[in-house]
Length: 126
Image 1 (cartoon, rainbow, N blue to C red):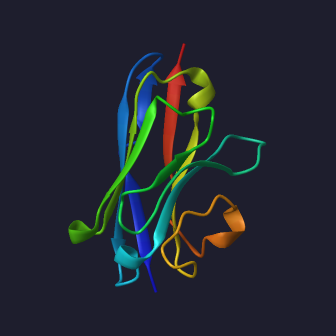
Image 2: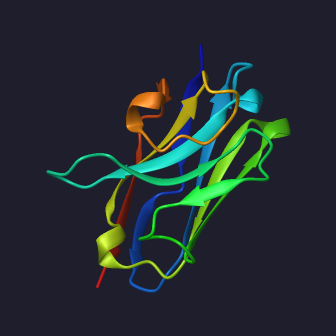
């Protein structure tokens, strides 16, 4: 069993930055692929960024490429998302997630993730 707790969300002006953190409990974290997703009101939950178990391979949605950076610290069981050049279109509830069944590789599909945090709200004002 894995429990995830996100933090770092908040209200920021357009062009600003935030750093999200996700702390995990349980031994699955260091061997699993991890991801950040986001969900705006009335919309589906979308993939934002993913990272493999080693931290050496990452993948980003086109909408955030070049602005967001995903990273992980397996020793501290923590996942990060550095978000720069934020725009109002980035406003959403952000979730971290663990895909424990795919050999630590990155997965883009919401359905491949079996553990989720409660979400942290990011609001970007124009």
